[in-house]
Each structure stands twice: as structure tokens, then as C-alpha cells.
Image 1 (cartoon, rainbow, N blue to C red):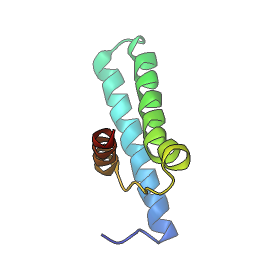
Image 2 (cartoon, rainbow, N blue to C red; image 1 turned 135 degrees about the vertical axis):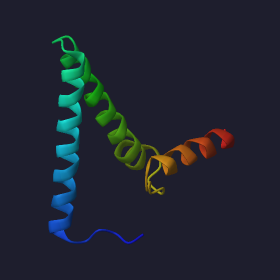
Image 3 (cartoon, rainbow, N blue to C red; image 1 turned 120 degrees about the vertical axis):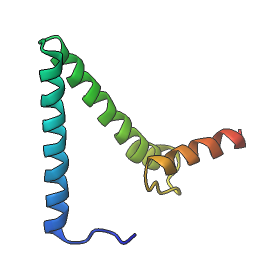
Image 4 (cartoon, one colour; image 1 turned 90 degrees about the horizontal axis):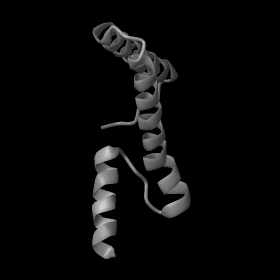
Length: 86
């Protein structure tokens, strides 16, 4: 698969992710029908964002600068290989 190079397409992709996130969060909150669900959803989103940041930035910059992650599956394979090495 080729890298996405068009700035317009990159912005469109980001906008679509944002729209998808907002719509799904709104539907979840409507389904929960309580204000207690909002902080739980916010913490969940924040935690997943931090985990994603950890997988792609922190590991690459501070743990193994030679390895380039291409996705979460690649990160999982990297973790399995590093556990086998000891």
C-alpha cells in the first residue's frame, strides 16, 4: 500500500476520523442516557489515545530507535519478539 501524500486527502482522512469519533461518542451517550457515562467515555478515549501515543512514539524514541512501527499489529509482533529475546 502506498503512503498517502496528498495534503487534501490527509486532512479529509483526519476530518472523517474526527466525525466518526464524534458520531459514535454521541450515539453511545444517547444509548447510556446518563451523565455518568460521559466522564467514563472521556477517560476511555483519553487512555486509548495515550496508549496509541505510547506504542508509536515513546517506544520508537526512547526504547528502540531502530524499529519503525507500521501499525498496532506490527507493534504486537515487536512485543512478542522482544519477549522471546528475553
